[in-house]
Image 1 (spheres, rainbow, N blue to C red):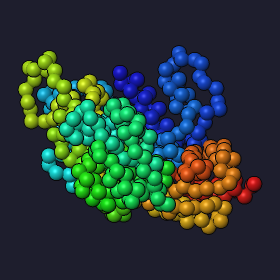
Image 2: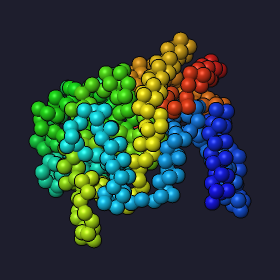
Image 3: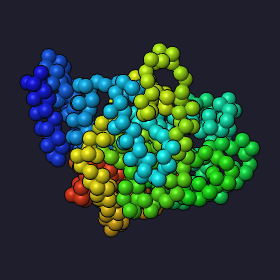
Image 4: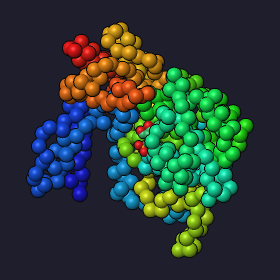
Length: 427
Ligand SMILES: Cc1ncc(COP(=O)(O)O)c(C=O)c1O
C-alpha cells in the first residue's frame, strides 16, 4: 500500500512541478496502447490533453486543481464516509455545513439560509430553478423565466429539465456592455401575467459582464419574482474589495450559484448553491424515505433532503482543507491578482493597436475582435504556450483571454499578448 502510494505521490508532485513548462495543450502524440502498467498509462493520458491545470490555460472559464484539494480527495476516497445522511458521519457533515455557511456569509445570507455542494454550476442552477418553481406555490404552473442573451446555457437547460416549456423562457436583450437591459426587462415583466423568476449573471462566460444586480433586485422585489444569480464564474471575487464593489446587490438574491472549481481553483466537480430561505431548498428536494427511519436527528442537515442526489461524493473536505491550510486571505490575494492581470492584458492589447476592444474587463475575462480571429486563435494555440478559446457575441467572432488559474501570472499573460500581436501582424 505504502509503495503504491509513494509511486502515486511521486507522479503527482512531478506532474505539478512540470506545469510551469508543460505544453498548454498536447493532443498530437499517439494514444498509449499499452495498459500493462496503469500508472504509465495515466501519465500518458494526463499528458495527451489540454492542460487546465497549467498557467497557459486562458480558455473558457479556467479551473485550477489545488494540490491540497487533491490531498483532501485522497482522504475522502480512502475513508469513504457517507455524508448525505448526517447521523452516519456527523463530524464530516459539520465540515460541509460550515463550508456552505462560510460561502453564505460572504453574501450576508441569514442564518436560515441553506445550501448544497453540487458537481458544478449546471446542477446548482438546476436546483435553484426547481426551488424557485416550487416556492412559487404550484409545481405544475411554472410561470415565466427571464434570462438575458448572455446567460449561461445551463440556465435554459435547467429550466427545460425542470419542466418549463420553451415558451416560458423570455430572453431579454443585453445592452452595449452586455448586461441585461433593464428597460427591456421591466417591459417584459409588465407584459407577463405569470412572471415567476429572473436569472441574472454575476460574471458571464463570454466577457465576465456583471448585471446591475441591485436594479434587478429592485425589479424582482417590486414584482414578487424570485431572483437567482448565476455567479458560477464571478461569485468568489466577492472575497476581494473590487469584486464586492462590482457584485453590489448580489446579497439581495434569493439564490446564488457558485463554482469553487472556478473561483477557488479547486478540481472539477465542485459547485455550490446557496438559498436565502433554506427551507424552500429543502421543501423542493425532500421526498421521504422509509428505510432511513432508524437514523436520529443530530441537528445537522441531511443533504439528501436538499439535493437531487442521495449517495454522492463528500465534497466538503476539498473546499475545507485548502481553506484551513492556506487561509481565506490567500484566495483573496490570488483573485485580486487575476483582476490586475485582466486589466493589464486589456491595456497591453489596446497598446498593440491590432484589436478592437469594446468592453473593459469587469472581472478577469478580456474579450476582443479581430477580422482574422479564427486564424489568430489557431496560430496562438499552435504555440502550445497558451490555450485560448473564442466565442460569438452579437454575431461577431470574438477572441478572449480568461484568467482564473492560480498558476497564471504576469509572464504568461504577457506571452499571450505577444503571441496575439505577432499573429495579428502576420496577416
Ligand atoms: C456563468 C456560468 N454559469 C454556469 C456554468 C456551468 O458550470 P459547470 O460547468 O460547473 O456546470 C458556467 C461554466 O462555465 C458558467 O461560466
